[in-house]
Image (cartoon, rainbow, N blue to C red; front, side, top):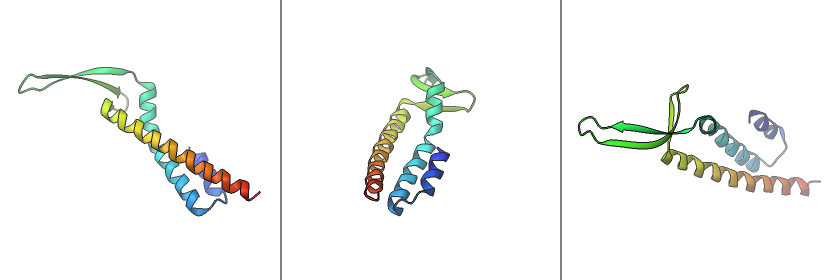
Length: 105
């Protein structure tokens, strides 16, 4: 991702498009940790017991023992929505960049 960011920075694109593109790439880069967690760890069922009442909650989660991170279904949906938004925004920006570069040729 860093290589792509550096390549985009070095190009002579219109400033507004370049900044939008770099912003979306930076957002995508931040989600890479979540992607790695999801890709390398299975879904598991976590069981929690509320001590005072004894109530039990069983919740599907994805957990990494190495990094001590847990993603529940609600967080997974949030990340999925964000990835879809970034993907759509990058697609639009790339179309604008290609249109601009083909006009300059």
